[in-house]
Amino acid sequence: MTDSLLEAAATGFCETNPSADIRTIRLVDYPLKLCVGMDDCLTTGACPLDDTFYDLVEQASGATGMILCMPVYGGNVPAALKILMERLKTFMNAPERPFGGLATCTIVHSRKMLTEAAMGSLAPWFGRLKNEHLVSVCLTQGNAPDLLDTNARNMCRLAGGQLAQQMNLRSKA
Image 1 (tube, rainbow, N blue to C red):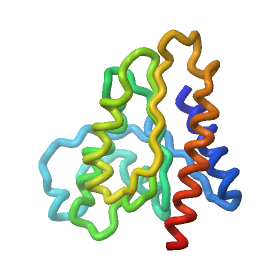
Image 2: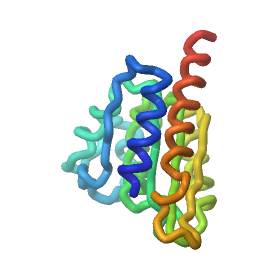
Image 3: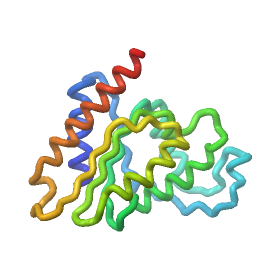
């Protein structure tokens, strides 16, 4: 479901900006250890944990925009994203922050749970990263047998196109 909605948004982005270089980052492909809260990283700028964190950070290098697409299982962001959010505090005092300073589109989807709470929990994170949140799509399956049998993909395609348009306007300003 998430992959299909993200693909639709990326398609819409590329329809508006055909020369775009798109990278798909699946957090589940980067197993991250839980932050241990020692906060040494705030002064050293280096996370002491040995895992795929820096490989993931490298994937964000050079990005100017982000389409964040996620399922909502328990009324909040998925655990993998929460772990990334906590681990990115490593760069809190750095002049440039991975996954920061981006134009963003956020797509959240759920079968039954409310999606608004997940969207709301992203606001402080986006603010800390100095991201400009331009487009949001909240999708709940509700009584539909399958969310993909609804207008969901088209909504995501339009959101991706809107993000590209806003980024084009932003770059011209």
